[in-house]
Amino acid sequence: MCGIVAAVARQNCVPVLIEGLRKLEYRGYDSAGLAVLNPGLNRLRSVGRVAELAVQAAGVEAEIGIAHTRWATHGVPSERNAHPHISGGLAVVHNGIIENFAELRAELSAAGYVFQSDTDTEAIAHLLQHTLKAEPDLFAAVRKSMARLSGAYAIAVLKEGERRLIVARHGAPLLLGVTEQGSYAASDASALLQVTRSMVYLEDGDVAELSRDGYRIVTADGHPALRSVTESLLSADAVELGHYRHYMQKEIFEQPEALGNTLEMLGGAGALSPNFFGAEAPRVFDGVRSVLILACGTSYHAGLVARYWIEQIAGLPCSVEIASEYRYRQSVADADTLVVAISQSGETADTLAAVKHAKAQGMLRTLTLCNVPESALIREAALKFLTRAGPEIGVASTKAFTTQLAALALLTLVLAKGRQRLSAADEQTHLAALRHLPVAVKKVLQLEPEIERWARRFANKHHALFLGRGHHYPIALEGALKLKEISYIHAEGYPAGELKHGPLALVDKDMPVVSVAPNDALLEKLKSNLQEVQARGGELYVFADRDSAVEASEGVHVLRLPEHYGLLSPVLHVVPLQLLSYHVALVKGTDVDKPRNLAKSVTVE
Ligand code: F6R
Image (cartoon, rainbow, N blue to C red; front, side, top):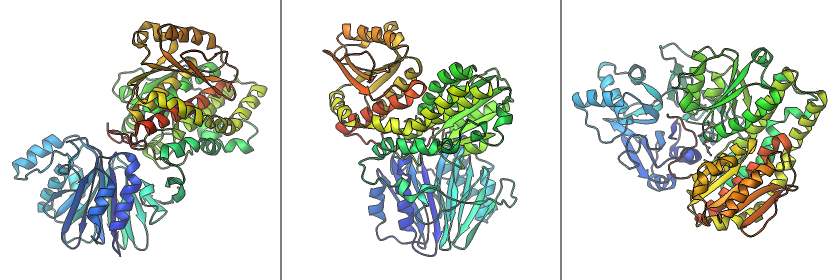
């Protein structure tokens, strides 16, 4: 989603703005722009890549500026709709959605303001200009204007004649970077690592004034706010591509290390402890009667896997809800339900709203599993667990997913132990399997050359089916999602038993059918389903285990994972599906890390 970078410095800040936008490219965008004061307002915008904006900005120098990557919501991607938006000598960049923009637009048009774009952001620019008539101080005018905005947003504002920037957030991420040379703001830390590791995370309602000598923050009601300075642990290298061709490839191959980091506490722990989820966890988990998982997209698929684990091993009823549905559904609340939010970014608007909705209904036992410290979801829940996958730049989630699964497996086992459903011997067996997980995934990654060969056969297909059963059914869903989002091949995931209830009608020689076929209790059932495909001339691509009794034959291709991994088998089986999508996308020549129309951090509804 949209990315913001803003700077007021003692030297030329244009290179910092451009580099910051480059670092935010992964969030997804379709146009980019910046505005600087040198000394008059100078705006540059372009549809397409930040690299094109950089060409336009070559030779431009200024000590104060705001910059933006736009992911279209109101109005098509075009230069006219690209940010910054201007009203008089004032420019605004904005992330999020202003829900009452139509009303504001009508009001401001009636007051004589002429809109040049279709965006909601331009309404903010004119509103500010209008407010300045009665309240000439820019800082006060931003605060006053915010009271008129509904929706979730982060903004940065500059104005001719001012040596300061004003930024504000309400429901969309924004943080400050503080240095001796100046003050900076951005949508996430990766954009500011180039100048500092000292970050100040703004809270909802905060308005901040940035000058080259420092900053001040006030809350929505105008009181000075003290926000702590956090040293970012993000390594600058972690956001570099290194020797990989794409971030997605890098992130797939980082999974062993990411899993090791997520499960690091198990190295020294001889036993499972609820304290892995925070000091308050024993109290929050005590007496829990069910689990409700809230998430979107890939994180939702992780939740679907966990449902099988939590019901089977911890013996707790578990429901998994797509956050955008749950937040508006009239459901039955139970205060003894553990509400688990899963999110890579921790900023997904629907998941955040869903957790708030659950809390408003009296469900206060909340836990966030998340990859980003200090994110909104981390702050929203009573308990937090950091997945420690490291920054995920590729839009298609990979290492975030497997580390979410590791965290969910840990949660399942902790809940099971708390309910006396885990023998000491089983506890040790599970702990050993978790500790061995990074090594097991490393072995699966060695299948890449064969998967690359398979991928060539998919590149000219228009549709694909992914089948799985039991806790591998969500893995089929995830495989289909990965393929469709980065290769643009239409793909559907199905529980294999459901095939004959409809989708079998689609199967012919042009429809590749990918099947997840671990050597588990459902393998024989799955094989019957695969025969149904074969009998209709479908081409089968089967990911089996070393000892799965599935043989290759005419129209049946089989690849074997090195070992069967029981409870954690979904963590292994998703890896070849990630590699398959990646290589199909490579053959098709799509933009692997930034697939069209998608954003990394979905901060709007
Ligand atoms: C797919 C993908 C998305 C996200 C979804 C939720 O590869 O990445 O489906 O999983 O947008 O995002 P988070 O996990 O940040 O809440």
